[in-house]
Image (cartoon, rainbow, N blue to C red):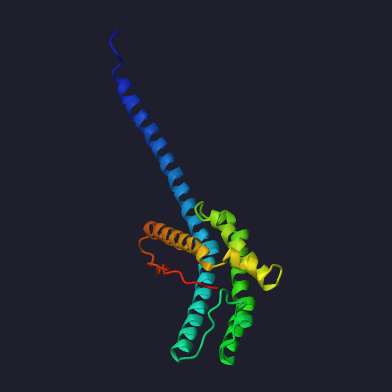
Length: 212
């Protein structure tokens, strides 16, 4: 039985229409997922990475200023105590009154300015943990322990020997800082690629400096 010549003229456009509808639906779904991903990236930058890095920049600026003052003090030929930790320097130091006053100022800054800044960083981490990338989350514990050890030391909850044994140094937080900066730049890059017309954001990558 000869085939109906009209079958192809009907089936081919129908198939093309179905394929077009499927492709259109797939593209629409892909665009929506992409939009949601970019919106989430922007939220990560706005609510987690940018605020935490801003605090880090504040701490670093104060720390670098402190180091400049100490180096200037030494360059002028004035003695500076060589101690294990900055907090117990006053008790160990037999140096000049001026050096003691500088140390007292640094210790007070540690208690009233620097540690509260670290605690703000931790508070953002706690509240916005769900916005942190998977590679950032493991660093939460190091930040928490770093703050807790300094708080215990400053409130005399532990003997100096115990704290010295722990050797509490900000170098333990450098992996966190490096991760924060890497993720910040990655997210910015993703947003710039999605919108080439947007201005290129300034890079925040800098060499880590000790805060305490």
